[in-house]
Image 1: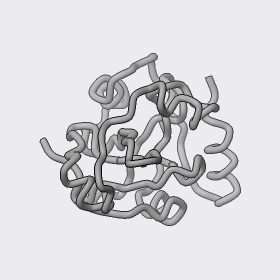
Image 2: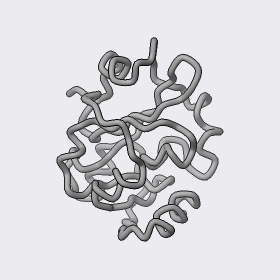
Image 3: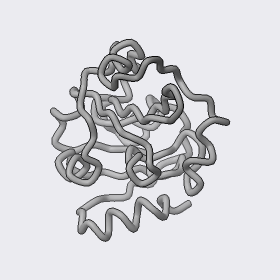
Image 4: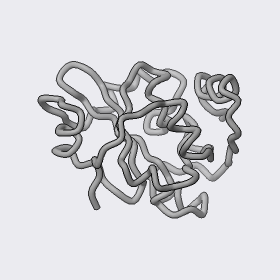
Length: 155
């Protein structure tokens, strides 16, 4: 596999220094963190949330869970729930389901990042497939994505 086309172009055009890390095919965040030999706090996982009439992207450390009540409060959405794969599959055509990178802005999906990720100098995330991850600085990520930052995660 190769990293998602939109993502690679975006990182290259932004002149972002990044590393692509290959790993054995993994599907869960804990497995990916283990394969990369990084703590779950540094692996940014993506959770797609269905708002009233659109999708939103929650980005949080792999060792935490999205708190939908906090997410709803942070976004002002009247209601929010986890989106089904069928609801978001077509939105990320160059990505394997469940391996979307935290760059919702490339897919017209608003991004909300848990505040705990902002404390990490570097973050890791899936590259659009289940075989590769990308490592970049959090500052570069934030500069490119310009996410809303809020406390949206819990243990």
